[in-house]
Length: 435
Ligand code: NAP
Ligand code: HSE
Image (cartoon, rainbow, N blue to C red):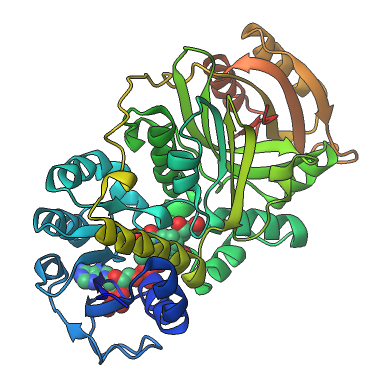
């Protein structure tokens, strides 16, 4: 067998330790497939003494993770620290400018700095790979960039955050509270070190931006992606949605109609219970891609956790080993080669039907006042649910709303929220038929 691909790894947490375990467990298989063994030569993290459940004493230890980018003995640097900037970004820049291929699972960094890094990698003729950054172990980056290369991409619908999907589906199944289930997701290693990245939708926005950039060939800055998380979703919403024939999922959405602008957004949505995306439960992710030639395709699998994510990192390393064999990085270059221009749809420009939950005082005339405010925005109600028997007390009032522009709906929500009979902030979610 030929010389090994020599790898330096920065970050030895959930994913980093998982990568070392996977190389130990499946090294021979990977070597047969990649044409050369993959050998870890150096590692770095914050605490050298920490027990990581894997023996790291056999690798060179480097205190400064950024120094790994210049490590003489390494062909490829793997970054598993996390964070859009800081040591992760410094390491990416150092590695690429030192002529080393770079593999990362860091969606925050790729979402914010991917274009800069892709250009630098192209200039340095090294590979930049980030399969693990979107949907964990699911090979959707390869699918979109390579498999769907002959297609115009009309739709991408993604369930992209294992933590949120785990929380929503357990809340639905058990009526559990958001906080209890979040604690379990953290314990299982699904959540980011700052879990607000997950539950406020930013992690999904990073991933959706990367998918949109790959699908449409222009850079989508995550700061320009309208983003809502799942904090406001309660077991009651999941129950009412189910009564109405829907499940609730946090979706990353990339939509393009003909030659129009591209809608890129992230929000929790009611999706039809009979749709395949509604069967995606727990930590599983799914990405539904519609190409004009191939039609609908579905990428499905574990979106988080040590093993699934390590599987994607090792896939990238196997690619890097093959690159070395063929002395080529062209096959797997990142964003740069297909820069057709496109434009993002401005926020508020889309139209949807909606689910609206209000906490209202149960007395005559309240529904009429709400209906009047909606009618002022030319917004129609399609159905109403109100549990009976709470005269005088505050009760949930569920309204299903006909198709209306987001901007008109936002104005109506503000006006409704100001009514004295409305006791807490209205909760509004879009209905997404996934057509
Ligand atoms: P993690 O468990 O928190 O591990 C982070 C590692 O980075 C730790 O080993 C830590 O060192 C090290 N580190 C942190 N700050 C550092 C610094 N300033 N200098 C040197 N080392 C530093 O994180 P993770 O879950 O493995 O995630 C790693 C990356 O993979 C992130 O970009 C994440 O978004 C991405 N990702 C994670 C998953 C998942 O399921 N967890 C899935 C897909 C992608 P110590 O151990 O010494 O503290
Ligand atoms: N925190 C992320 C999730 C990890 O929950 O999906 C995988 O990117």
